Image (cartoon, rainbow, N blue to C red; front, top):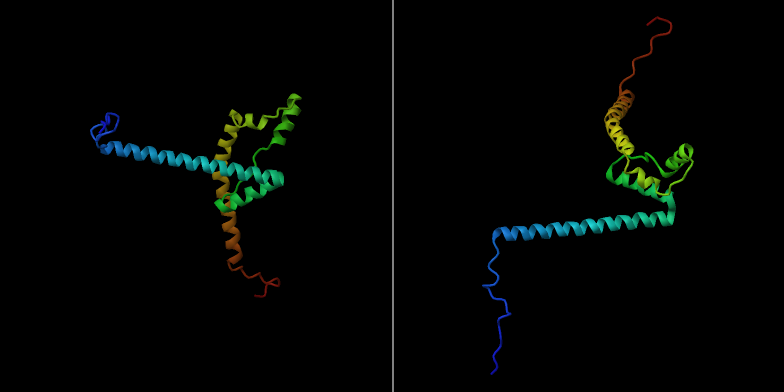
Length: 154
């Protein structure tokens, strides 16, 4: 019989029983990795869908997609700025064109300030909107006072 060298074989002594902390860390890492996989999948799916809609239907298709997103999420959104607005302003003020203008605009202090102002205006106008809706709906259902008698008899 030949002798087999078992020195490379793992033994129970080489790997002690994991502690509770080791198991918690393992599960935490596993869950984090799983969430990252889901985030990557979601990001790729959204990019694929938006790209396909744009490729097949152009900006009008993206507008339809935005409307469907608004409807699904129960949002009311609008386009605040678009490329042509920025392109026109760049050309008007500086006589030049920049193909990366929208990307650069997203990283400006001006856009951050605009978003802050929009955020504040949301509260103000949501109050105005709901008050208008409430008033319009309640005026229509409230009994109207009788018209005065034009002859003054009654």
